[in-house]
Image 1 (tube, rainbow, N blue to C red):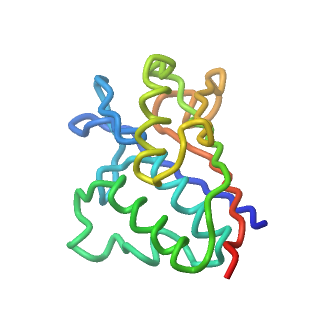
Image 2 (cartoon, rainbow, N blue to C red; image 1 turned 90 degrees about the vertical axis):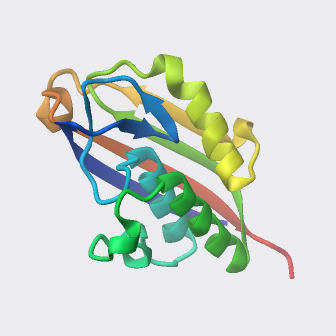
Length: 159
């Protein structure tokens, strides 16, 4: 068994879409990033890659490379999951926590779980996604940013 932790944070700005777990959420601000800024997909990708000791999202899809400008982060996540599988690992489960004051994400959580599961070829019952407020503290609490923590559990596949 292997455990990996992933983290991602983005500044929230006007003029960008807010996309989390492949779900486009109607909100006045979105995540500033080189790709589409899907912090949930990014944190999960880093958790998976970390558990398999395969580096991180930035080393695979650097923000200095114009090919990844406005890239679909769920596609990047799928590529990371494929690399993990090719390295001989299977996903047991994932758990992620999105930290943001607004918007309220409860209505979107199930769709995020289903999107991530479909992207990874996993059962949605193995994918946990939660949203938490930081009670007005820090960049997530004052509304200037969003953060996501993710943990992945992998098992080595039998030869």
